[in-house]
Length: 165
Image 1 (cartoon, helix red, strand yellow):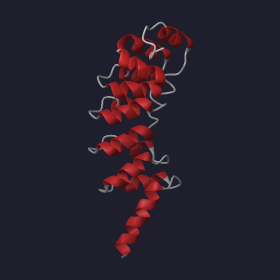
Image 2: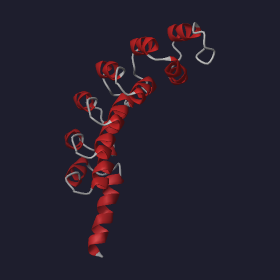
Image 3: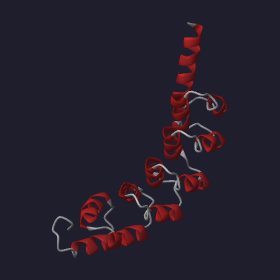
Image 4: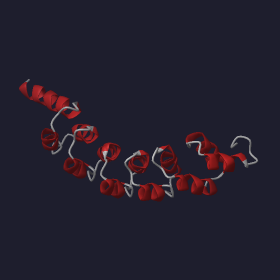
């Protein structure tokens, strides 16, 4: 019974955004994968703990870290992750540096490129280049996802396919 109560307390601390970073760092060393993923997504987790969690072998933990990270070097590192889901999270993270966003806009996986389009800090040059690279089906989806920059709208309006326009 006492052990179960301690586990519940640890879980509650991992979720609570008011838990001090020192306690979260200590809990991040735990074997429990759910708890480590929860700590990785906690906004109060320290940069050093996130750095450790960002290299965890479990995708869910790296994914949670990628969504929570604001450290450009770690986001750059995770942009090369073997998991498409982790790269998607980096592509969508507003703290991702422009060079990394530009690199992810050429990712071999279409879904990663779509997440780049959803990033509010993606530079205009990414949208312009992606128009040239995507096929018609991609353009339809891209037109629905991207912000309405006047230069992009003009280029999309020239397509013969009405579904793109």
